[in-house]
Image (cartoon, rainbow, N blue to C red; front, top):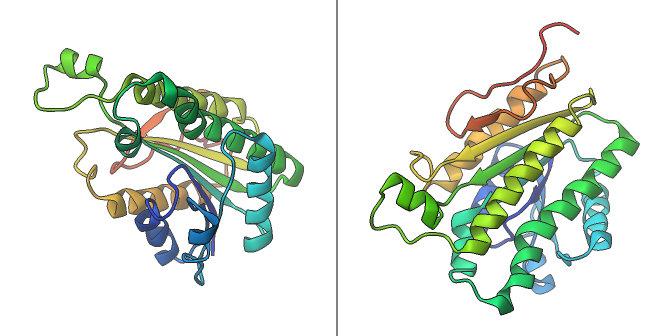
Length: 241
C-alpha cells in the first residue's frame, strides 16, 4: 500500500481526486479548508489537516503530520488546477494578489522545499508527481483564435507558469538522487480527460505506479520532460547505470 501526500486542491474541493487515490489502495494525507471540516473527511484511507500557506514552518508541520499519521510517505502529488483557481481569482484585483500568491505559489514553494528537506534526511524511495491542469490565458486564446472562452486572470496565468517552472527546476535538481522519481504532467484544456477529475486521478495513479516499478535512476537529460495526461509516460530513466 502506498502512502500519498496530496497538495494543491483542498478538501472538499479535491475530495473526488483524493477518493480515487484511496480507492486504489492508497492512504492519503490531504489539506482541508478548515479544522472543522478536517475531521469530516477522516476515514480509513483519507486524512486531513489545515495549514498556513504563507508559512514555511506550517508547511514543515504538514509533512511531519503526514508522516506521523501514515507512518511514512512514499508518494507526493502536487496538483495545480488552474480552472479551479480561476473560480477563486476570476479578475485581477490588487487586494487579492497577496492571498492569490500564497494560495497558488508560496504554498507549492514551501511544501516542495520542506518535503525535499525531509526526503534528504530519510533517503527512502519516493515518487513525486507535479500535475498541472492548464487553463488558457488571454494571450493563449488570441494566439489560437479560440472563441467563447473566458481567459484566466493574469495572477492565475502567472501562477500556472510559476508552478511549471518549479516542477522543472525540482525534477532536474533531484535527478541525481537515486531514491527519488519525479513525473511532470500536463492536462491541456482540450484534453479528453479534462472534465473528469476521476480519470485524471486514475492516470496519476498509473503514472506513479509505473515509475515506482522501475529500478534505475532518472536521467538528467529527460528529468524535465512533460507528459500528457492520458498518454503513456516518458520515464526518462537510464537503461544502464
